[in-house]
Length: 266
Image (cartoon, rainbow, N blue to C red; front, side):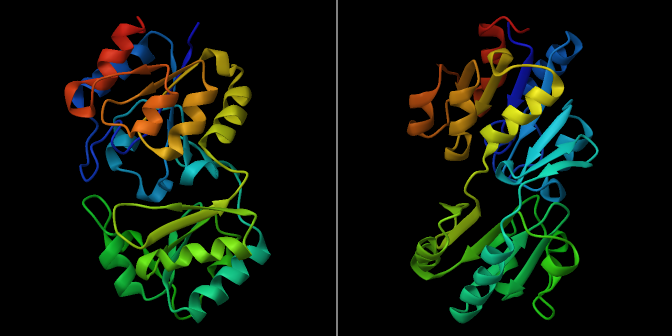
């Protein structure tokens, strides 16, 4: 029996570039929560870049953030992190500076840009993400020394040239990021949404056989495959639909509401 509902954010709960959860999805999940279901959000965003609507109206019990490298309570309190190693962090800094890439690190509490801040925010900012959410650390580049190791690194380079860094960082996963050409992101190779979901669900006293997950992108593959029921949005990429147990309608056609009705959750 399903007892835990897990949701990606961008293009699953909230259309990319928008700020509000689809109203039909919000109503459906609130009804499920009233009926006793637990709710988890699992997103690539850091808590500090989360759309305010998720924090204010969406009835999540926990949030898995930064591609699964951080587990937060609803109020943002950090339960656990999976940072990259000191060696990977220091070598990334030197390599990115040597190649003059625009790059920044994701931490559990902030986004710190270490090179070409103006270029970075010009590319990264979008509706819902403004420059005041991204810190300029190009002078000292020391946040990883004073705060703790980063959870991920976001890099802009011509023709995705930064992907060549994969060869010198076997302990990191590199993925294309966002919709801007030349953007990539890397983080601990052992970390993903699925790993953190497994640990969090166990912490909550449930099993993966009691979980239903919703997603649309490559970073949702692990959680869709490992949960009892994996639901792909109608607007999901084909490789996501291929591993899903069920494909619902798209985000603009009440996809979450329709799936929860289909499985008699609501």
